[in-house]
Amino acid sequence: MSTENLPLSPEQPPRKPRVAVVFGGRSSEHGISTVTAGAVLKAIDRTKYDVLPIGITREGRWVLAADAPERMAITERRTPEVEDVAESSEGALVLPADPGNREIVYSEPGAVPKALGEVDVVFPVLHGPFGEDGTLQGLLELAGVPYVGSGVLASAVGQDKEYMKRVFASFGLTVGPYTVIRPREWEQDVAAARKKIVDFAGDHGWPLFVKPARAGSSIGITKVDGLAGLDDALEEARRHDPKVLVEAAIRGREIECGVLEFEDGPRASVPAEIPPPEEHAYYDFEAKYIDSTPGIVPAPLTAEQTAEVRRLAVEAFEAASCEGLVRADFFLTEDGEFVINEINTMPGFTPISMYPQMWQASGVSYPELVDRLVQAALRRPTGLR
Image 1 (cartoon, helix red, strand yellow):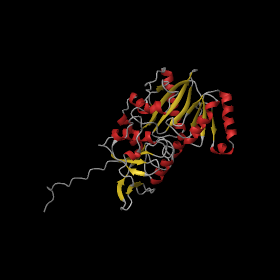
Image 2 (cartoon, one colour):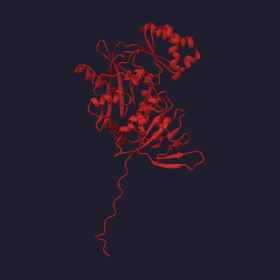
Image 3 (spheres, one colour):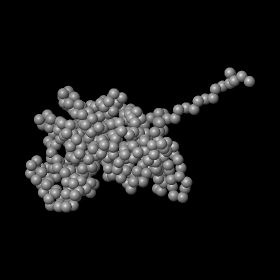
Image 4 (cartoon, one colour):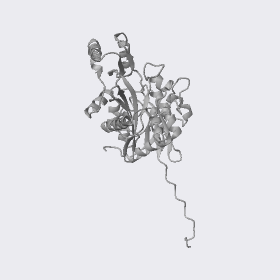
């Protein structure tokens, strides 16, 4: 019998790329990471991607999370927890560290482990240690899974504010005065470590900012106006990180600029200015996320200043070998010089965060921003590059 007129079998539609949004984590920024995940889950194009939400609890357990962005918002001045959206209090997920196997496996006590399918790209919206600092990136490199954002080295440099400043200074970027108290210095001679800070204040004056060297979201930072507040500030910083960074105050305007990786390389957004918050001593965690102190976008700068800060933001991105995205934070001093304060390789990504606001003002909407980051990750190979 002729088959000429038989209907053709419909072809199987191509599978959509599967994006695992990983959030939460073991750092003090767990809650803000969960808020960020909710915003990304709400914005990602479901016609283009399959999405798998994965939470990491404060204890480090990987859990299957509900795809429920409405439950990942700040309510009554409280940030959400991964446990609030975990599908099970006992189940756990495993990503095999095998480049030939991208299957996520789910297991519960007393049950047969269940394969949940392959992951094509991970969108890690973790902030702080054990996620933004190169640790998760190293795991994903071992597993051969592409991921959004910077690689191991850039993530580690972007997390450790001491080495970040060293890298920037070596590339000719201007950084402010600082000193570091390492764990061994503190453990061997507390008095000598404290004197080191007092001598630094003698050279640069008060106030000082005492902060964890490897934390973000302004958590653990104290503005110290004199000797009386120094010990409490050190205790607070060391509660988050045994390594402490002490910075001299820089008098100037706070200017931020976003960098995003396009097909032809990194580009800078319009900059924003963070005005001094009225009810806070500085732009701390409460001002950023709880009271939502608004930034000014675009920043009221001259055309020359805008061009300069955008150039410097891209230069910082390249100096640290970053990929995907970065928010670069500067001070514009009274004599017109831009001093780089820090970069964030996975900046705050909530709808009120400055990074998406700067790109919105630059013509890139939040959903497009998410899509561009996923596409950049899919274009990039894992391994040495």
